[in-house]
Image (cartoon, rainbow, N blue to C red):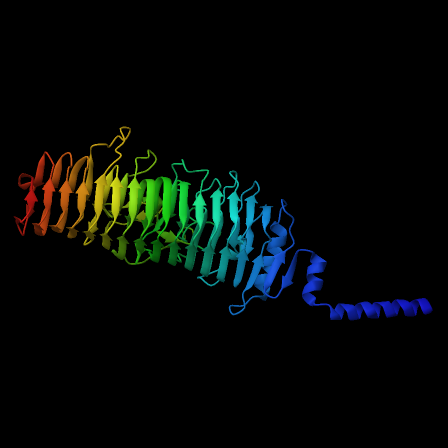
Length: 516
């Protein structure tokens, strides 16, 4: 009996101890996966080991406790670690990997993702994951990993800050679809293992939500991305920097700001915009890039155009909105010839008049229509061009003002060498303003308007030392208002050639120009 009483007494004492100990401590001690102090959760990790399960346990706990007004931080202790599965982050959570190096083991998984594939297949809108911050850490993806580094979807108010991400065999270091309010600030993306691929391998991809071949594991309802800011980041030794390469017909990605980023050694384009509205691309520096900034409102072929949602089950119906209302300004770029780059150009505004139906990427039909781009202001950019400086193709009512374009570093290996122009305005482009630009040393013509294109004004430009013409109109082109106050010198085939024999004319007359 005495023994029984002692046992009962001991159990009571232990029970009281259990009551007195903090619940958080008991839970952490029992699981040995994390500790909690206030609103900071620290996973229990060992340097040089796989930390996936304990970090995910900490993230799950954070999501369960956190609220919009009470965010929780999962802080990984400083050190070098491995992961073998995605770190899944959810609402009102901060993942802080500052001071850590985290390497991906072999396999195919995102290093970080919003939620799980199962959850994302049922989520709608932008509210599945809200108020998320991922900051710090050196993230090194495996060459064998065929998944993107960070995957964001169905989220709102997401911040990526001071992340260093490199390597990986897939297209993207960050990919996003169906998100509203993503900021990527002060990060470094570099040394992709696919930088010489012919694929369009953006380090940061802003994607569409229409078909599993474009972006997997979602409810493909066509929800577009919007309110994206990418600022103060560095991109080095990559195939592409930032952009989009799939298009959902007449769906638009709105309010994108790409500012004050640095791009270096990019074999294809630094920035590729596709159906962006209300965009600002400003203050970026690009060194040794195959192409600078593409601003497209169609694809050159229909192979990447989708016309339906729900994985091809429902036609997507929306009105065409050609007015981009966007600004490309004060960017500085050094464009060099790279064989894998589709077009060696500083800035291109591109649309396409589709004159007969074409098969789309999802076995639909791209209808006949003029998918032109208008309402873009291109101003104050400095372009060192080994190819085209600025191209307008099926681009209407845009402003090309105050840019500096210098021909330089032409490559003997470039099959198109000798055919480039400083500013080229071509088929379908009408009523564009071409004013106050400075163009020099182009290995062909400074400003060329041709093939039924037009400008409203060509005023105040300075064109010097081009190997062919200064300003030329050719093949049924016109200037509808004025061509005046231009200065042209050192262009041996002609300073200003209006091509009257080829059906070209200037309605307001040619006046007050200085030529030599």
